[in-house]
Amino acid sequence: MEFKLTLTREYLINFHTKHLYKTKVFTLFKISLIIFNILFFLFCICFVNSKYTFLVVIVFSITILFTLLFRMKIVNSISKFIVNITVANYKDKFLFLPTIITINNNGITIKNKFNDNIIKWDGVKSVHIIENNILILTFVENNIVIPSEYIKGNDDIKLFIKLVETNISIVPEFTYPREINFDL
Image 1 (cartoon, helix red, strand yellow):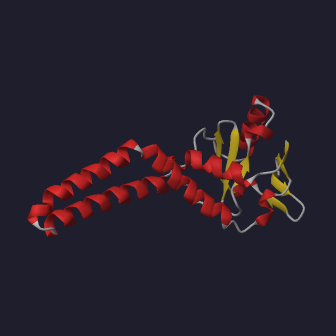
Image 2 (cartoon, helix red, strand yellow; image 1 turned 90 degrees about the vertical axis):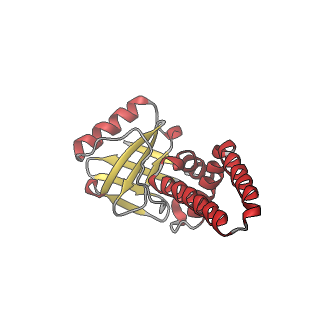
Image 3 (cartoon, rainbow, N blue to C red; image 1 turned 30 degrees about the vertical axis):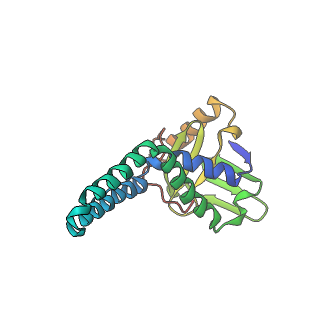
């Protein structure tokens, strides 16, 4: 099974931004933001002069209301910011070159102008199929993304799943990974 593809910066940013809010890291970020707001509110209540307590409550309420109303906009902005920094700092500048990814019983071969890597099946951490995009998380190398536009339909997906199940004891998941690290 072979895929000839060229990833773009925009595709990677949009793909990961769309799903980042489902990850464990982002959940922890949201929890810490809520805890910070509550602690700040309690600090203001305790240490601000009592005649300004009502003002503090109003400001806090407006902040919470604003956060609830524009939650998805805020989540998308933060997600795009995190992924954009990761893609901008990406160590392997060959990522955006035309690449041939071959998947067979030996493993996953990645070839481009400057790079020729083979990732053995035991180096695969997990496999995710999200909206016909394939995301392969590895122990040893960078994560592999195969966009849906380079997959020729359900037959390629079924063949890929069969290869994965035959060669490793991992069942592909049909969700974005919660444990992803943005080393891309």
